[in-house]
Length: 212
Image 1 (tube, one colour):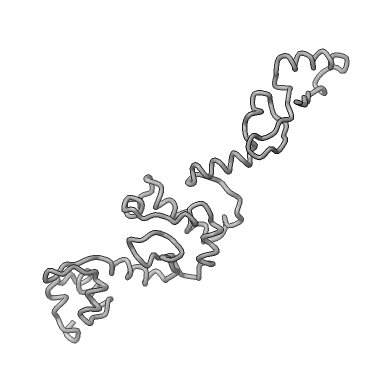
Image 2 (tube, helix red, strand yellow):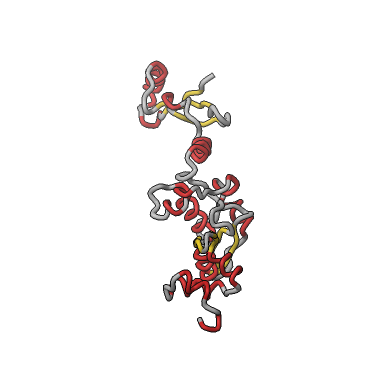
C-alpha cells in the first residue's frame, strides 16, 4: 500500500480534501510517496515518478562499482598523504588523459583489485608513508600490488628506475643493474659513466674502476 504525503501547509485548510483527491489522480510536485528502494528495501519519501529509483547510498555504491575512477566514498583519508599517492596511482594506470598514462596504463601497468576501489586496503597494506619516502614498484614492469610495492627514498627510486634500462653488449642484453653486478661495478658508477658523462658502452663497461 502506498502512503501519500502532501504539502498541505501551502493551501487553505478548507480545500485540503479537494487538493488531495486531485493529487492522487494526477501527481504534482507537492506529492510524495513512501516507497522502498529496489536494492536495499529502505523506505523513503519520493515523488511518484522516482519511486523506482535507488536510494542515494545504493546509487553511489553502484556508481563506484561501475566507474571506479570517478566514485566518491567517505573514508576519512582525504587529508592523508597516502590518499594523494593512491589517487595518483589510479590516475596513471586508468586515465588516458593523465600525462603519465603512456608510461603506466599504456604499458600494461595495472593496480591490483584489492587496491583499485579501496584506499583502506592500500593504507592497511602499505602503512603510513614514512617521511621523505615515495612508493616504488620492485618489478618495474609489474603491477601496483602489496607484493610488488615498497616505500623508498626518491634517490633510490630514481636509481631503480634507471637501472631497469636495458643495454645490449657483446650479444647479451641486461639491465644497467645486472650489468653493474656482472662487471663488478657500483650501479651509481656505471650509470654515471653511461648517462652523466656519456661514455660509449664499450668504454663504460671495460674501463677499470680505478681509472673511472
